Length: 362
Ligand code: 5AD
Ligand code: FES
Image (cartoon, rainbow, N blue to C red; front, side, top):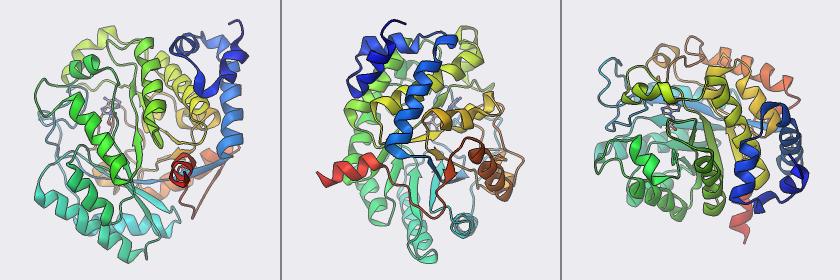
């Protein structure tokens, strides 16, 4: 592509047109993009990669997203819910391994009992780790009041993917009812920021009906929102979901993978100081998927520390990796893998988003 360097140097000022052109780069020309994003990453966030121990504590979900394997209507999934003690034990494990951060993720539930449970868990986690763990929540859309209560109980980061910034596409991949509304999703993301969380979002890449224009808009959405952290990965079809019927229109798996890497590279160039996670979905396609993402822009990885026997049941998509391993295997495996990329793990470091820190100084 002519003038590619010049376009890349625009950084945060890359236009929608520029982004579409770069996303359309053929494979043999994307090296320039990846070399550039690697440089930006090194300069902005260095070669440290941060661990977030992921605890998928329940797959019981009130929602029915058309792409997701743990959707309410999927009768083929055995539902589980870890006990508080099991969750606390996993959190202790993360602390003992010097992870410094954990993520509590589960299907979406909306009730006072659930809000209370999370509040209690947060307090106990901080008690037993002497406030040394950063806790991220990934528990879907909640009221601002609930977000505030959880923040006050010690959760300071929250992940809520927008899934796609195109409202029309959003509605195509969700049931059409009040529980699944783009407007509410967006409002929830705004509430999180207002409450003061380090706010994370993300999208799925390679959804049926999605275009390069949509993906360019996703990047602009994250930039204009001023998001602190992002986790995004390829869409992977799940057999027992309605969106599986559209698999005929999907890009080939490898194209979805390559597009996810380009999205990560372009996001790093547009927002040099944010935290970007190497999504597990990347590894479902390519055994070295997460490592490739780290090379070209990601700086966070989420080892699964859910007790092994439950991992098989938290399947959002087919071929989820690492479902047979136990937590210790994942730590060792990931440490070696990250080492291979020339990066090192920031054990014992919180690894807050540099972007978040800067926007709070102003
Ligand atoms: N393929 C890829 N990602 C998925 N997610 C849910 N289902 C799938 C799927 N089939 C992602 C969504 C959600 C996150 C927890 O997992 O983006 O926000
Ligand atoms: Fe789980 Fe490698 S990350 S075994």
